[in-house]
Image 1: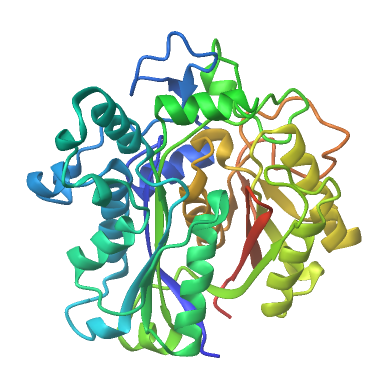
Image 2: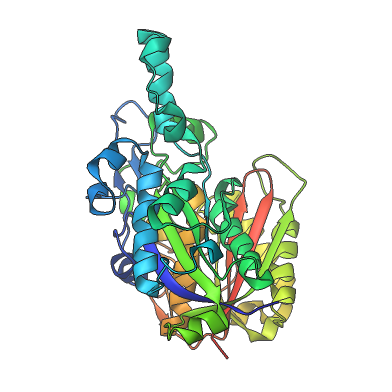
Length: 410
């Protein structure tokens, strides 16, 4: 297996439309959650979300391409361009060895809603000929591949909230096994639509803290009442170590392990004892030859829901044993909201930046300890700490778990 490193980062989030802005907000614990503006939510029980603000797709694509693509594709295009520029990789040479893997949970659900109303109210002949490209999840990876000329492995993962992490993990395997020299990988999502918000609200999964949006996403806090829906994209450029060295690339961190597992328990709820997530983390640690004592940081899935946060805390304690209290844990969903298929990509970029800058972002809005969540959640602001090894966790509906292990370049 070849060694794989991270050389480029790109993000679009409610906290900023580039890496520097969103990372600064993460370190400051500054929330991007506010009142929903993308549609009229006055009759909804949930009126808040973490919307991307002031986003102009024409900065990364033509106006024609913007009209012909959905919001989730546009986010991916912006994050991919930033990540590629950051990496300095020249994709015009060796393009058949460069690929793209972008995870998406729901794809163009907003366009599906609009298309259904058009078909019902105006008839089938009024459906846009671009309807299918608008809605199918693989269009993010497809568009990025076309736009950048990436002719290597190209695919999309769809494992709900674990989609972005699975995409990076699978891309890592392609580079490690030699079927690609570099991959752009991560996740993208844009699901703040009436149908999607109403559906999650009906499940009682969303916070109803409408009067205090910035405080609504509060992972691991006793008074958490659900997650806040977010949107955006997080993509990384990963490449084979010697390939990166030969071109003098800046290396943020090394990808050293990837774990995945299935709960085989419930279609939406994690196992109460965290067994599935524990096996997933253990697999990532084993793949990276990492002992519990070597682990310094975990970017947790930490959704701000009662079941997830308690289950994940149990999983961490199970895997790390006595060392669990020595590890810094944080959930950056306190500021970005839960970006579903994009979450793992955004959080992977923050995990890599934590290693690179030796600083751990805090868990925003944590105020009251929960006996079911007894670990160190980095609650007193950003914390300076030299990080040898770190994990980034993701959990998806259907009990689909994914975990990435990163390290400093030793």
